[in-house]
Length: 219
Ligand SMILES: CCCCCCCC/C=C\CCCCCCCC(=O)N[C@@H](COP(=O)(O)O)[C@H](O)/C=C/CCCCCCCCCCCCC
Image 1 (spheres, rainbow, N blue to C red):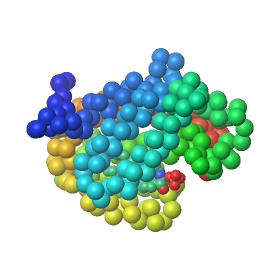
Image 2 (cartoon, rainbow, N blue to C red):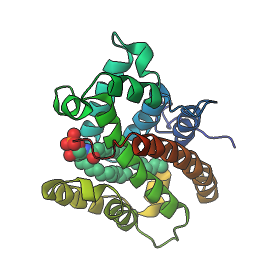
Image 3 (cartoon, rainbow, N blue to C red):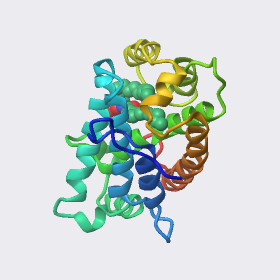
């Protein structure tokens, strides 16, 4: 499917195809979750959120700060151990008390990735709902329902309140589809049909790593 990823003025705009490619590429042939591609997927999504307006900046700045932490590890002195989620988990677990390392500044990579991983569940639920939505369904409702089933249990009251205000500011479904720059509605739905399983795979593999190493509750 051909997808135009340039705006009218040929400026770089959000492109769901790029996000999809990044999440596909982030699982290598051995089932490892590659951190560089994973971060690229998130940065693409953040570009989309920024295009919705400044009222979402408290969300994107939190996501960016987490991506920057992971990037610093990925390009730092132990770069070879921060190639994938699996190598990072092995390295940080070998290094000692991961709970203590998660409370330090900057926090551990595993703790940082976990916050994005939880947000990936929200994204997976939201995109699946968006894919099957009808003309009169509202992104604000879909977004908020996905949030209630995923991230909300990990957030304090104040963040839940701020998020619910932000969700109410989301545009209508048709405006939302337009900002996605994928094309006609059928193309959006088709691309979501590819994106959701790709994101699900990454989520499931990551969840298995966190479960195996008992890291789902890192502080
Ligand atoms: C086809 C594209 C459509 C979908 C586009 C979605 C774009 C989403 C882009 C980015 C999502 C942001 C991811 C947010 C990560 C949040 C991580 C987190 O949980 N952080 C909290 C905990 O961190 P620590 O304190 O433990 O370090 C932190 O407290 C959170 C602060 C900010 C609020 C996070 C609210 C998350 C709501 C996610 C929904 C985004 C709605 C965007 C709608 C398009």
